Image (tube, rainbow, N blue to C red; front, side, top):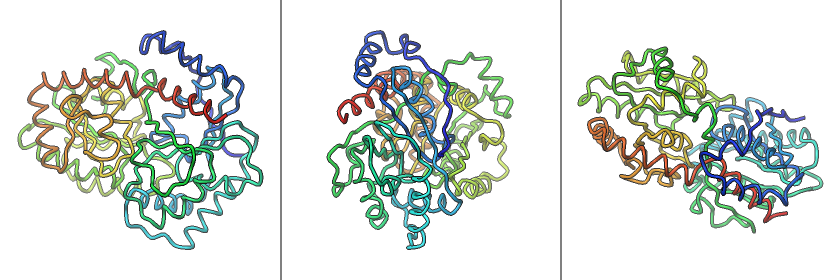
Length: 410
């Protein structure tokens, strides 16, 4: 069997104070025709990264509105996850090798996962490229199969896109974050545009009191009384942690007491993570105001929450970004965001209202300095950002979008 991920129970009614009674009623009404339907979400990891965070909230909320929802995780060899990382990078535009042997490893592991996948479901939601070929090995397709793509493929390497495209087209529907992400040659009748979302009641996003925030950040040798800029992202070339350090050094010339915090979650299907962590650590050198933190030294969801709330400015210096849930999280905490003008980031950062969209490192540094020196502007952006997230990027809206899609397909 595939690994079944256990999730903690959630109640839709707990969100009344955040989204209002009418919206709760509307979601419950949408769920009525789907009562008792069986849904399974399948992805590559139960922790680390936005997909796992979304599923840990979405699956229990689906259960709460009467759907029999499950979350399962595929198995795979180290070779397989190395290949899927190359596929991921290639789909985001990196020039990577993609050999016949790599294709063989990918297909063999998908075939093995198909054998491990048991049970019958009304809706099967496959997340991202790792398990995209499971359906290819299914002798009899039962229920509706949906493929959900979380990254930005606009500059995808053609040979990799053409390899996975036929597997996507076997599905009944596909979900993308932006309509611009849908490739022209994708032949699929049902395409839904659904941006991701955060759970405002999770340990990562719930309210914290000031004392708790300060206790957490000081434990990691960060001074809450001095300016803090933070990026929460994997140690990954696409998140450009080296560029963030270069930007911080420019800021430090103007704001001498500034501190930089880089927080990552090291995921088990991310073999590049360690290599890039070491690269980042070497680039940081002996600067004790640069803090590299991760789940490996005890920084979990609660700690990320505290660091985001303790920060004066949040950075997202991505070179490619399908969406970037960490931006939504930061905005929800009333923090201004300075982020690269790429992928799904402009969906969230309304330039000059909820933060700044930037191009190169020097522009990024300039905007950060501006916010650190103008707290009134920073606070106003933070307030606007929180309301923008409440209206557009909460887990309750994501649940509603899935219910609409299921009702359309059934």
